[in-house]
Length: 501
Image (cartoon, rainbow, N blue to C red; front, side, top):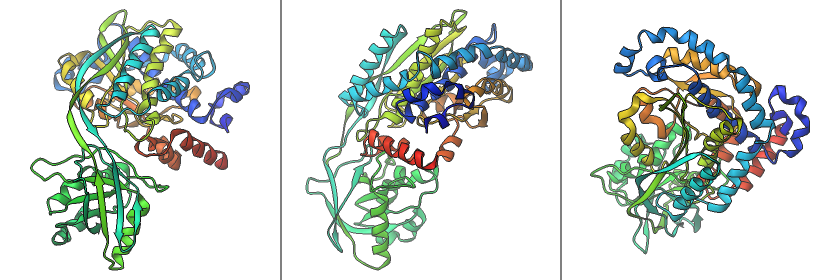
């Protein structure tokens, strides 16, 4: 099973396959090569000017300054190609050498030691101290940048259907939700499948618990019900909302996540329920049966807490003021281990710098890994980092975030100018040994979105891997949003993969 997942040119290394502890270990170490090679190569090339001035940024001021140098993009692309031997050494060390499985072991120790890391919690601050100490011991230049973050506490929560029959409902309150009175909220249920249906049945919503049983289309399209369902129902007088979990696959497992209250709209309790229970109540409603639910939530929002973005870097020897940034977020939700979302991304970012240090490579520009805080609350730590550093935006050549799970890498998505894309085409060619040569449009990442909007180029992992691995993504990337344990989920992942292979 593992051998099939290895790069094609790695067949000769069959003797290593028994030492691979799991598919996740292989995927973590392959994934670390994406930010590593991308950031390293773009920090090594080009002898004098920032990448953003030469070929990358789309902002008006920088574009005006780069009209002449942008013509040199083909030369820069050729320069990237000359780093084939460097790329080979990095791949050898990460996949087959002394660093094999190191990022996986780091991730296991981190999650075992710290556990979940919800914004504002003591566990999150423990995680920040853990990573600060670990990266210091690794010989990196590490510092903390203070930020203020939300502090929401879940509290005890439960739900039960009282009519037409008694049934316990599995729920997870949504981030920043208000709580119910101690005795809970007991009300008749209105089940709808869309915002449009809710508007059509507006006269029925007052005094009811609105259940959204929206079909899953894609995460990007369907998540709006989780994000805005409470306020949309509250506008019509609803007393609470229960949202079908945003997933195409369920094992009676509710998902948590963030939600947003609209200004000027009454805040009502909101939680996610399982796909199975949402479908059940939909069928009962279609049969004209009266549904009554009691919802109890002890959620509360405390004053904002002090926290930190954790920053580690290897300073550039020629242009230390110019930065190539890679990142992941340290916080997670409170019902899983946060291994996939986004402990893996944090370890990948750290591992990239470790590999460069181990190989004795000296980047021209500063390579910086930022481990964000409070991403799950809407990229709060990243927003404050941007506000602090945006005056120097012309010195940020590239930003990258790993927050799509630790899967076998297939390619990169990229946001940047056409000239920049030409350079990135050369970069992914150097990833041929691990079969990661696809370049698509549309880099993404919650924590780097402000930089992209300002014109800084940004690559990210290809979402094609999520589509290709389909159910495997559902079983792994959703772990931190559910109550399922990471090792149980990964066991299912590997069992399914063996069956397919």
